[in-house]
Image 1 (cartoon, helix red, strand yellow):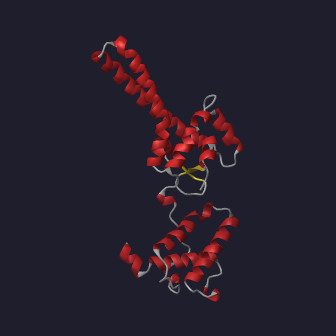
Image 2 (cartoon, rainbow, N blue to C red; image 1 turned 135 degrees about the horizontal axis):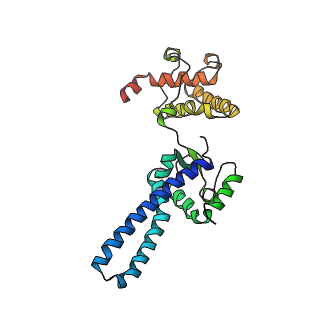
Image 3 (cartoon, rainbow, N blue to C red; image 1 turned 60 degrees about the vertical axis):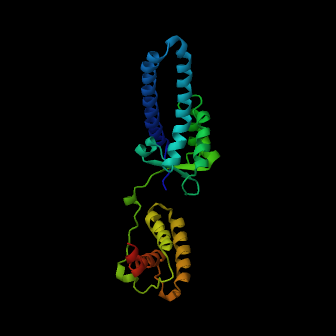
Length: 237
């Protein structure tokens, strides 16, 4: 998946910081109007200031981690910027990674405007800041569902000769994940991945080498189309 650059990440931080500032401002106004009416201001002022400092601490540290856990790698700002945090293996992040990467946020922000984080991301080929190194995460451009749908070069009738009775919905998901992302892959990786998948599904479907299309991607399309046209898939849909 395409990595998010510094511009996209700063846009996400800008939106998130704006949201945090608005929330803090609103809570501060509420405290300023309510507390003096319920307590003597002189005796309560220190507690109000301490409470606001504690609130800002929780808002700053908890905002990113909680949203990234809840929204699977996104905060409101990241969602607005169209980016998402994932593990460097391509899998969704866990609560551990969400907390770990954000514990380093204060260091990445030194001496201001995420100076340390920007330098780190600038010299790293995956645009990672210190928090990403610690948690094993990367930030990528989020793909809309419509953009990740696989396209087919073959027509459905071309797949009728493939026997897919032993294959499952998970097999279909694997093939269609590759078909949906193949245009973003470097050519060598795309060819190698198609060959591995084609060999795997040729063995599972007992397809003889002479019965396979010369193009591995055509064979994978044929297998996927055959699974989709099966009676089992029609019942599931």
